[in-house]
Length: 244
Image (cartoon, rainbow, N blue to C red; front, top):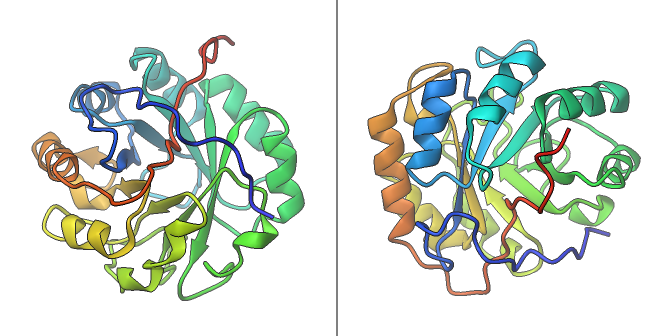
């Protein structure tokens, strides 16, 4: 079964309304751009540790960014079919508070990582396994759902039928991803009422380099949207979590 952890905590970033979805900006590679995203109201910053990604960073690079971020911003590591030991080593080095598992990770691995005190977000997909209908297999704090088409494990900038998830977030915490952009995020949120949205390529100049103007526009667009259900706060920072 999925985790029943409390995700109704107040938002860490007071600039964002509590009934608007949280925002995760993923694929950061530079300190200055990550700090700018945080200052604009991002609730979470994502680091990609998948070697084949054009946005891949090392644990040392992620640490430098992590240490420059405000304490209120959640730091998330994205992994694809990595071992428990590798994930935990990088999480400790980079000062991560959450782990996003984007491959074919087993329910046992999800639980093992969650037992270490990290927030675990399991990626599920509409067009390949693990499918978004398989939430009951994983004891995750939340689920990120996207289409799963394309060469890389992520969204590959492909928009998809967000309405497939119109009932999904009634039962489990949802991070909506895949093909989101400034001009479609309102429709996407209205269709499936996610607790958070995750964007990478939709606010980039090129892979790994964010367009801060687009980031500002995207976050401002999300701030204006209200969801008609209790919002589970997926990205939060517990006291003392910045300790090594």
